[in-house]
Image (cartoon, rainbow, N blue to C red; front, side, top):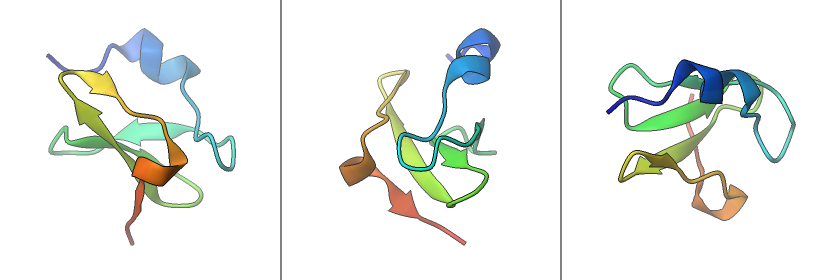
Length: 56
């Protein structure tokens, strides 16, 4: 089950407070500013800075 669009509208990166977008493969939410990817586990976004991975 993909992340709900309404949820995406209110979620923000906990580090820089910018908008996050769903990755094309649905594996995580990527911050548009700092490029951190927050994983999605069991259809729940894990919005913890320590769990994020920085991608280019």
